[in-house]
Length: 626
Image 1 (cartoon, one colour):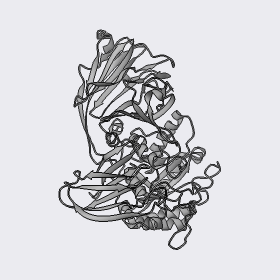
Image 2 (cartoon, rainbow, N blue to C red; image 1 turned 180 degrees about the vertical axis):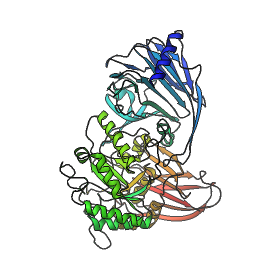
Image 3 (tube, rainbow, N blue to C red; image 1 turned 135 degrees about the vertical axis):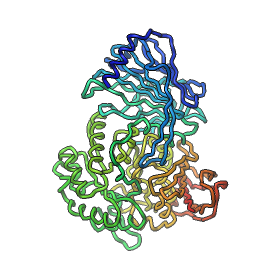
Image 4 (cartoon, rainbow, N blue to C red; image 1 turned 60 degrees about the horizontal axis):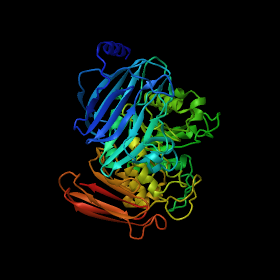
């Protein structure tokens, strides 16, 4: 890296200044143009189809937190942008083959140091980042939008912010930001390939303006070279185009080593079963070995991948003397892991940051590998955002070393496409998991989050709760009702992109709905293809995914309003398909009658359409098989 800087710095001394020159890098299809100019500082703009969407905005680093550094020149590192293409075959993800083309250009920005601005422009977005030889610097990057567009923002474990006009934003806003420019143009603002020493991006806004700024955090790495995260502007004609994009992953490095042991799929969970009573025989489930056996048997019978054991299995999770390898139920955990292996079902282990910090983390993870665990669910990480980023990257690397998948919960560092480099990082709770969020989670929350949070990467929302009668449950934790319907709960499991689809209920409540259980069992990853067929932010979404067997699954979910949608089946392969449609019944309503549904089977081809009906707060699913 240092040699590259030295060479480019020499070039900057040889080439003439051209302060008034505007350099432009366009997408392969020529729709998106990223332009760069010098006006005391380095500035960029972005236009789409000839329409400016980001007006001239500052980009760069400086040694001062409060001011942008003056740049003496802008020098292309080569005569013109280079055309690039890539074919990526992810181990798991939205589809089995990802093809992309982009144009790239590097620029030297001689100022206090000869920083390098790298620019990539794709057909579905633009990205740029700065590499610097300096340490202890501050980023000064703005997004000066050309209009008062409507935006939605991630908002931690609360309702997402939005719809909100850019001019109404005031103070901090967190990415991912989804932005509606017009009915046929949507943007998403995020970052990719967050470096080990980087601060997760925060945005700041001043009421009355249409500018979002990257909050200038002091970047202090361990060396004298720093490459910043990619600043990414995703582009789509529909919000579904943003959902289907791979831009964030493509801006991350390829993996090193063998990750064939990573097994994405549907996973059961023991936290919410605690206290549940079987409607069949009255058996009361607990977080103990007999209940784990029943869950493993159910998973094996229906092709589910794993069972997730949650907190307190090694003792009270927030107490420093709870040993994550020896405490409380450690022997039973080893027994259930072995039982799961006999049944072909993996077992995940919860690890709180208290134990992860107070006990040697690598020794703990090595012990879990020796036991044969499938993964780790890591909770309640402490530290400032930069410290959490470092710790997350360290733990992900150590989990990979010890053949463990990993799921981060409780205000994790946001996804940034890292599942390409680390395929074992299969999901994280970058949302309000619905069973913890009764005070905020409503049907409209879901059909907003999938167009905001999920655009950033795979998320663990814990959909698929099926004890849906009116009134509280007997569960020990958060026994409130779930504002959903039976069809909606299963539809949400398919719509939500995650390498670990964690479902929270006991076997008997899934068996109560055989057609829906069949659909859930058909969610076999890795997906061969995924397509968002339709959707409007905050209103509804229709998702189609092709499973590992080549069958297609379609799911639709709506907000608090009922609706009927016509689904075009042209994505199917040639020939006839058996289509089982399961949808809310005429009398279903998430407020009053959640459990009723109807199911029917017919034969279709790719020339047909299917009408999907959803009750208020409801959903609908179609299983298409040969």
